[in-house]
Image (cartoon, rainbow, N blue to C red; front, side, top):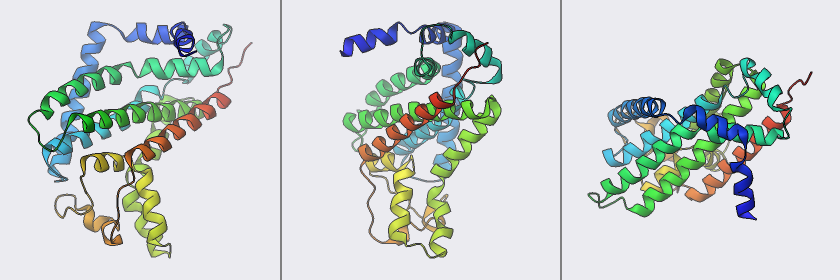
Length: 273
């Protein structure tokens, strides 16, 4: 049964076309250069924020890169310029979920290659680190893989709503900004009378940096210096708290990915003439 499912997806012409359009040396080299540039830029900015040791801050930077890059690549999946092509694709036996999943997998080819290279490079680097081992690196990149497709599915869902790449990107980034900044945005809710014991755990479960901090044993909310989340967020003043298990948050992001894909399939209704 698994082999039949894999063979079924390998025969997906949408996936073939997306991969063929991107699988050239020039495009791959350019994509790697762009991803590496922004990874270094984000790493420098987070390092200036003094969130921890450089080795651990690097993985925070990689998290932010994946979260921001994934919806950017898929937000034009169903733009107005591609509606006609999608309608033509619908004359084939392919179903709506096959078209959207083919686009999701194919459009995220460059980040997948980048994550693969990053995984092997991180394992080599871990040889010189005493507090980061290959098990933690494997867990981190598994979470990155979940984020990649969850945020990519969000981009496709926003694309089916907006039918415009720019608006879809803005919508996806707004949602992700709320998830990333929720530890700061919960302050007004606590002031309005909500109990910290109910609001803070929800914020930690929704924040994409939480499982990274849990795996790396990095408490960014108690570090006083740099960006100083200790004062910006009420998490540290909550008293004793623990980060949720990384696999639990991964499960919720997988569930979010499924919800976004189902919503995209329901909204993706090409007008066959």
